[in-house]
Image (cartoon, rainbow, N blue to C red):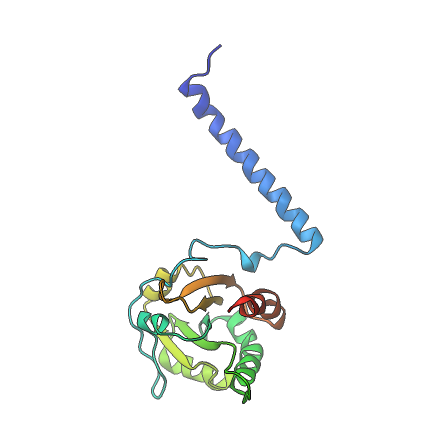
Length: 200
């Protein structure tokens, strides 16, 4: 009996379920081998230019965050998306503080390997200020995204999240990594450092 359009449409759910099942099995095998990290799943923005987003003001005495900042960046940027009301964001404060201190340490031969910028998501300035005081004012640039519009353009689905952006004159900043979940030493060493070491 020849295949008809009706037969093909009826087969689509079965094929879709089979594909999902295969993907799940591969994920389980990856977990078993320690090769699957759900915080490092590729997103549509990975490998793409920094998205256009509204200019963000900052707290008094700190530089804000605009799309133009990524066009003129001269070193890699690790963008941390966080909020003071987010418990995992509070838990990542020790590592954020440690990383900021290490990047600020004097270097004789070269500049810091990257800049640490922040995007504060749907938070009140006073609450954000208290969080930053606890973290030791780690960011050289900070954008207050009080209405969440910038985060939507970045494809943020929750906090904390982080993006690694490399300088790219043609793209005006290129996203090479996007991670969900708090930044830790392990995540930094396994997901961020390899990109920094591979940079020209």
